Amino acid sequence: MIDTQVRAAAERVLDLCRGRGLKVVTAESCTGGLVAGALTDIAGSSDVVDCGLVTYSNAAKEHLLGVPAHVLGKHGAVSRETAEAMAQGALKRSGADLAVAITGIAGPGGGSAEKPVGLVHFAVARGSTLKAREQRFGDIGRSEVRRLSVLVALAMVAELAEA
Figure 1: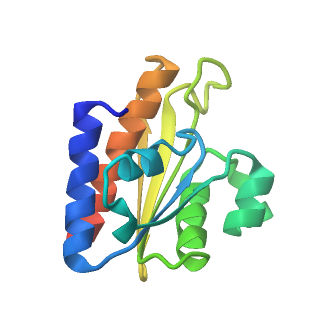
Figure 2: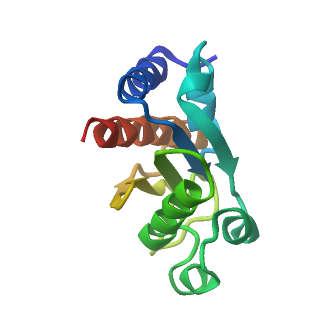
């Protein structure tokens, strides 16, 4: 069961994509499938959702999404470059028209001075269009970082679907 704010955002994405004939793929790390879950929690979403990939490990990002090892080695899993490669890989390896990728540090541990808990990178891709965003939510708790990440991801999908 999803909260009302997430549900409204997911319904908006489904309506926009349905109206434009777009299929969506998700590539998720720190959200663990919550974006796909929010979309598929709504009946009838199968006409929009192509698939969702949870690529938590670097090996999964490489194998399932085609994220280059040198990108992960140079920039790390939590980076704009990795999020962009995740979105592009998901788009390329699916039957979808629009991809969203999320990678971050939800906490409570795992952060550093350079990449603190609450840092999340997002990317959306549609055709040759690629947009990325960094969000620093802060150490507000794992569940809230993940919930807010779902909202940002859905808003980015809606924005690109409207473009």
